[in-house]
Length: 299
Image (cartoon, rainbow, N blue to C red):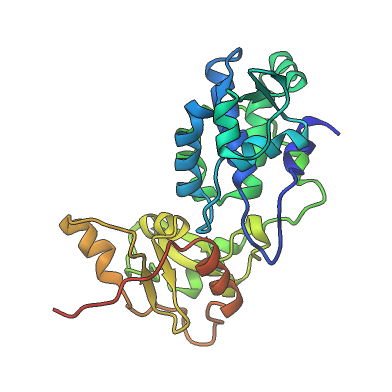
């Protein structure tokens, strides 16, 4: 099995579309660290807070300690752990990892492979991003782990061989269904006849078996697409907008653009087009949306 295939087949707990991005996040973090310091090691006690923050930002709502991927990523052959006593992890307990001076880094064979082929690092990162996160988060996630992806990547992505193919008509179908306006705020900007700042947003992410179908997509402006994918915004069973209680801002812009959306109805789709599937909406609520929704208070 080559390295790209290993990255595509990380052993993860899965079931009913539940997200488990703990290993991919650690792997991406390790790739970013290797890019900056190929000979460095990651002491668990030094990187624990960074990994916690990544899991909070990009993981599911059910929290997991970063000790879990730090220990278990070894089983995939891409990561190794040493302690003050020698090779091998002491286990997945936080206290054990701290007390034994546990340090991790990319497996020796993988480090050698990246040194021989520097473009491999970018391709590995692309595999992890494509399979576990929506495109709207790729750029900021690379920034968060300190990765600078090469602009020239292989046009053939082996990890996608035999997998589902995207529907190239999807964006146009979704924008048409929502009459070229954001389903949350109504934004409908154009340059001439071309819409700008409008995107087709999956409700259930493509990486988690979300189909390229109208009942799994919204037309959203760039801002609300990002907030929807980050779990700030969601949909309830009545197709009204939810705003997470965990989102806090006092600026007039945030009040206008985000907080004022609380419990507002969606705009669209046009009559005769399927609304968002309850199945896909429920997935987004359980796997992406953060915490409980705000309650609208009329002033």
